[in-house]
Amino acid sequence: MKPKEILNSIAQIIYDKKGSNIIALDVKGISTITDYIIIAEGNVERHVKAIASEIIEEMKKKKEKPLHVEGLLEADWVVLDYLNVIVHIFKPDLRHKYELEKLFPDAKIIDLKIDVQEGVL
Image (cartoon, rainbow, N blue to C red; front, side, top):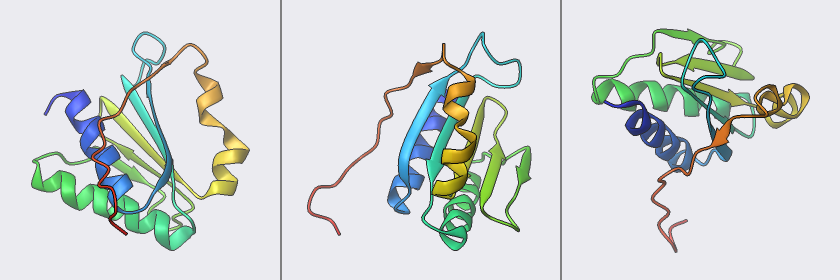
């Protein structure tokens, strides 16, 4: 899959698992470790873990496996490394504390393609 396809697939999975405050940053030329970063929140540790686990499982079905997974046991901040896309799933208090978005003030915000089905609860 192309990096933007991975990015949009992961964003959709996060949305479908009721993750919130999803943002994707284009950090090409700014970061030496990746091209894109996606940041989102789960409500509590169990929710963060569920979102991260779902991303791993659904992306495996698309033949994409993370190179590295960090924080899945503690699950207050999980990092999934898909080489060109790095995913950060936080509990809200930790996201506010670390404010990763501010590390890349020159990054472009990516317009994600998320299928929002109206009227679905």
